[in-house]
Image 1 (cartoon, one colour):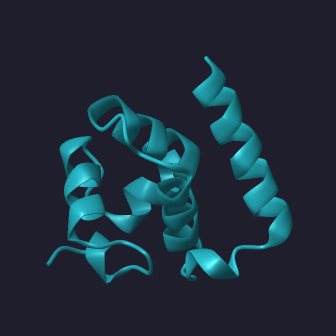
Image 2 (spheres, helix red, strand yellow):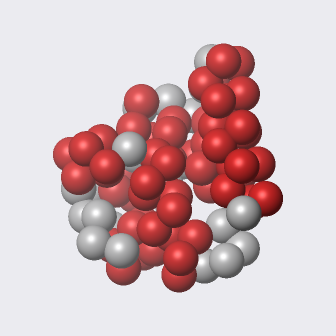
Image 3 (tube, one colour):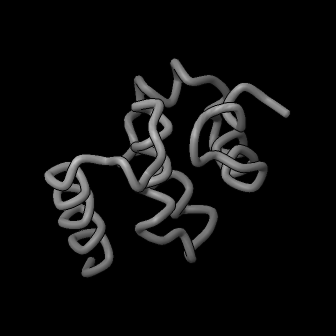
Length: 86
């Protein structure tokens, strides 16, 4: 197991995807941010859903995705819908 799979919401598959797009540490993930990290994953896995975006944001914050504040979830959902409509 790597550093990323020790974070909340990040299992082996998501860690593997993050590694494949060049993100190997929490610091790299934090610097890139959840939206950009998710976009990189979306480029290699078209099935990347909104729950993966929530999971990455939660991991950056050190909390379960279910604990994300409502306003953050709404912001991420707007971003996801915008990207999905492109």
